[in-house]
Image (cartoon, rainbow, N blue to C red; front, side, top):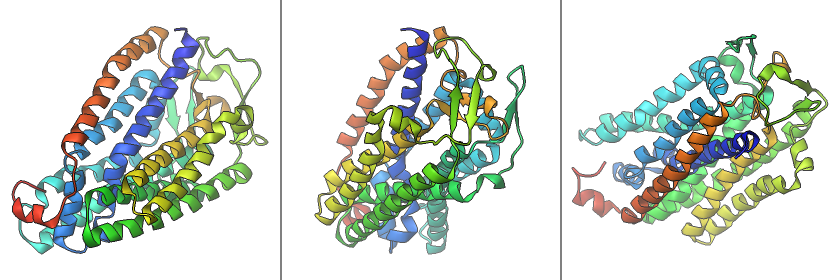
Length: 378
């Protein structure tokens, strides 16, 4: 496989890892972010926790794998993101800390105050990462304030508070509502009685909020935010650095890729249709199909962001020339080739094991299950 193809393959593979994280760990985060919203009693909140209990730690590995893949395939992107966005990523990390500790210790003491405090921390541990991930994607469209010198050393000139612009916060709302919908849809498969009724209602509300926010973000992106485009001849397969290109901003829309590659329109259109499908199937009490639609909506919303940005990965708001693209931030051809072979071997194994674990641990969780196994369940 030639170098240009390997660059595209790894753009796709890292996208797949991000989608895998959003679809699997996304419903985990959605469920725990709704812990204090849907769970009215201690038993109901324990049902919610145990609905994702067998899977949440394995699902979180998708995030770790995506971070490792970015480090190996796109080292400059990793350097800029993990230095410039340090405080935002640290906020996500500390929020994620609440989940393992909360799952393990929340039900160890029969104290309403103890359990209530852990419930709030778990809710924060689900909602904050979901919000911050959306804010991060929003800032990619706005451009991040970083520079590169001739040695490819990065310097970030922004602050954490500059990330919280209105458009970025709107993208955060899309992300949070999307994962809340996904988590509530998953609860339809794993719960019954009043908790199931409330999960259906939350699915409808979250799907509507996601749809409205997603459409509003698309309109804002088309008419209110300047896009980036590479000017002049560019050989995508050549060895190059970010400083070897000319980039234009201002009159270019971030949606120009949909004109150049009409097939990519399937992503935003499909996202809207699957959001509507999630709501309709919820109303008709078909939880399994609703969860499939919810998963596809999550995947296509992420695809929409990726297709809109391509070939840019991390634009610079200081000077467009510093912007990082699929063609100029990758590792060597040999590194990408070895990683590709490893991915071909191990990704199918991971997927097979994941599906097997869901099959073995499937089933509705009821209050009686909690009462019968007070010690062995969360």
